[in-house]
Each structure stands twice: as structure tokens, then as C-alpha cells.
Length: 80
Image: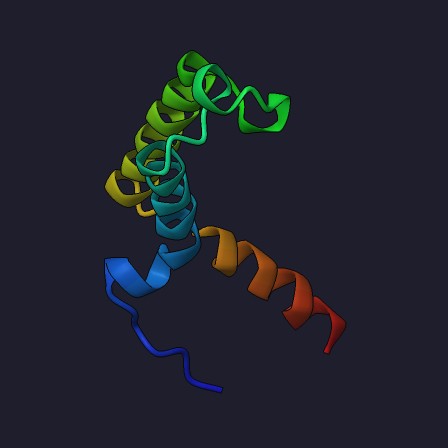
């Protein structure tokens, strides 16, 4: 089966969705200091997580490393 070459947006869609989720969390005020819910995490924690996610994505793109979906694909390809 021929693999289709995907653009960055498609290839790293999982990573981008995770980043977008953190941004939405901040936009909606879902941080512990505002919501008082421990599950939301502190502003500092959310900011550090977002920073790490962005740095990890940039490293993957710069070094042409596999995306999360690429890694999952490999797992399923082995079972066939």
C-alpha cells in the first residue's frame, strides 16, 4: 500500500490538537486558580505543559521525526 505524503498540519494533527486543547483550556479560564478544580492544573503547570508540547512539536518537525499517529501506525502495521 502506497503511503500518501501528508503536510505538517495533517501529519502532526494529534500534537496540534493537544496544543489547541491547552489553549482552549486557558481561554475558558480552566486553571486551578480560577476554577478551584484540582483537575484543571495551575496556570504555571498548564503554561509549562504548553511550552513543552510546542518545543516537542518543533523538534519533531525540524528533525523529521515520526508523529504520534506515525508511531501508532507502526504498531498496527506489525499486527497485519
